[in-house]
Amino acid sequence: MLRFFTASLRSACLGAAMAGLIGTTATAQSTTQGQGAALSVDLLEEARTLSMRNFYARSLYSYIRNNPAVMNNPHFYVSFLIYLMSQADDFDCGRIFSSEFERNDYFTQAFQLAPQLTEIVQNTRITERFDIPFIVDTGRYNFNNGRLELTNRRAVGAGSGALRRAATAGSARGNRTDPQTCARNSLKGTAVRSDEFPWGFAVAHVGGNARGEPAFPFEALQLSQADARTLFERFGRQLYAIISYQVQVATDGRAQVQITATDGQLFGLSNDAVVRVRTFAHPTLSQANYLDVTNPLRIDLGARGSMQVALEQQGFRAVGKGVYTGSANNFAAGAQYPIVGSGAVGNSAFILRIATPYLSDPEQRNRAPVGQERYVTFFGNIDFEGITAVEAPVSGTAIVLGEFDAQADKFKDGPKFGFRGAFRDKNAPAPTPAAPVTPGSSLDVLSNQPAAPAPSE
Image 1 (cartoon, helix red, strand yellow):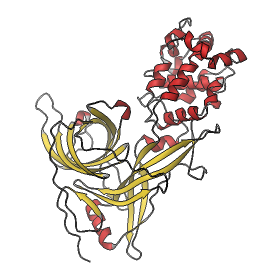
Image 2: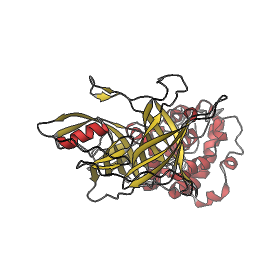
Image 3: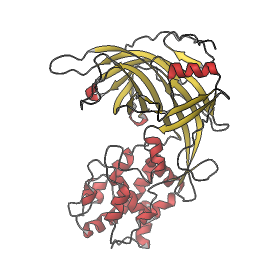
């Protein structure tokens, strides 16, 4: 049984005098003998580098800030250490400790890290807001009342999934260790209760009542027949949204977060235009702040090639042109093709629709005729933690536009794949997009191609 549930050790956990006794995790574990995986993890470094783009990590750090006494709870503290271990690359929970003696020595000494870990949590930069991109299918237009239903609203990316799941599975770096399961298994036979740690956070709306997902502020649309026709012909049955949310963690010790939608855009995307369909602004918490995407954007697609895109931004909207370069091989250099696209931005996320030549599939699936265009939608996030003086890294998920299933009344998603890239310094040369043209519709469209006038009714 672990032997640190005494008043003296609990006091030592928080005592300032203990902070000077240890400098690194390696020093704290220097007298521990064994081969356990825990000994190879630098807890302080893991705490410093934990990505605040991960919703669960951001909520956990905010929870500790708002409830600092939890670090004085040995049950919480030990679970926190195991959570940090589980974020390390190649951590093997199956051999976390080689014996119960090693486990006892490790945690007894690791209590001395509490002041440093607390300081790291307090000083970590946590953004108040985050964005969730959505794909929104539309229903059939009701000609009697001008109503267009929004159906099948799907969140894209890690934002919403982390809100609904009990805990995030492993680290954002690809580790698949489940922290809660790891803690439960490694603490068997001890008096430590892993359930005193918030492995998940209940989600509440503005009124404080529980809900299963972030509020989506857009309901059915009221559109004239002319605008509905323009919307369908230019942008199809699929719209998109980027919603900004503000997060508040409970200060009464409950593992609860309050999610408030503050700003949002509902829009349509084509390969050469973006239309504003609806705007949402919270009456008191609205702080519209859009990413600047006018810097040249590089998108790396791995075996599929790469893209260079230059965008012209107006408010939340952007249109542009660029070059797609296919992957080179042993027989030929990568061929280059012109591409066009449009997009929209939030304060931490963006969505781009790009028309490209067919992207070859490394697994030899989903083949298409040579030269056929593919429409690919990129759902990306900027890595604020990795921004340098010359570039801002981006990453996300790309989805090939699928076909509309009339029987199911919704789109079928095409192949999906991850991408990385970066917005580069503006000094790099980039194609100059054409000036936007005002279309013949009351819908607010930004386009890089002349738009056909809206048909008369």
